[in-house]
Length: 162
Image (cartoon, rainbow, N blue to C red; front, top):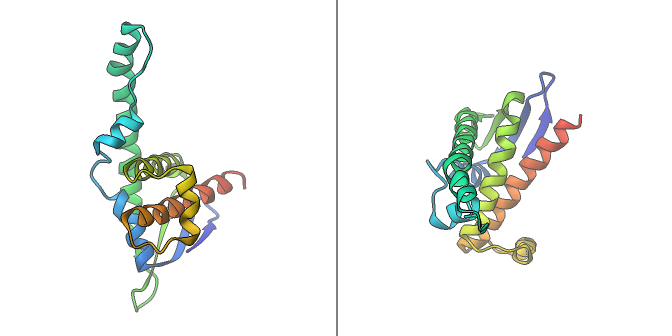
């Protein structure tokens, strides 16, 4: 997978192998990242003693975060819907992240990485096993997906500084 910054500020990802496309799109195309573990991780209950603060958090902050995540998810899905074949053999694909969608992509990459780590019980220690994994288990597949999303995140951040 190659990434290049376009003159208009968009990021173009090219030469994406079909198997990589599957690993990239599978977790992002889920309607919701709604497993119980993920929701508990992303929307942790406050441990504060102030019940009014906790109620306000639940009533105002959590719905705003959910709306923000949903909006980001829609933008990412729109961009992924434009995955195009690069050649007649239809083996390689490309997609573009518009400059206006960069923040949404950064947020979604973080959300999906956290979600995969929580769902598959991947810790910082386990994350380093990616170099030696055979990717035969669901956890090893999740490790690879986390690496892919990390690379996209890194590309987005580097493009910001250019």
